[in-house]
Length: 259
Picture 1: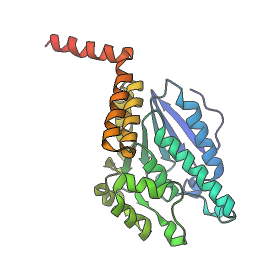
Picture 2: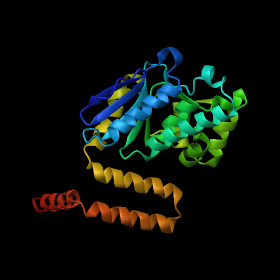
Picture 3: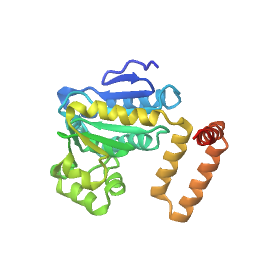
């Protein structure tokens, strides 16, 4: 696939896996309005591209994943501008959360503020041993604004979320393992290999089934158990009616007969 020219994001496709790498190493891969705009371009142009089955997000270099919003430009905005920037970031991260394909955060260093929110908006997090996570906003007398308070509660529970948001501390990837949002920890030199191994495992699955399963899992966070069960049954039925489901059952039964 070919993406239109991007200034801040490097795109690499390996088979059915697309790697989107934020490339602002001089600013520790921090966000800006332009980076958000380009991120939405990536989402727009890959959403319906059948050659892309899994999206991997990372940062350039070995020091930072993403360190959040570029404070140098944020300090110049007024109240309305601050609100608009927060909504813009939230909309992008909500798109990642609801993206129809699995999204993996390949965290290769600092994931702070908006960068941590970005990682939490992804479906899975593979982190290198040098990675650090945190919400430093409280140290600037402000708070997360790109969905961090909501994502943190959903991904690690209210007590851990309060600890991370209210303390402003940085936590090593190893410290975050018990928090539940890191799927796997590995040496930095093996991060790409481990991430691609997981991404290719997912890419080998039926794309529509992945979409329906991810959607049902997302709704499981939001609905009460009874409505969640109904939603799952409906998603199952929709997927079941597709030709690939019949093919999958037939393939399984044929393998069973051959044993």
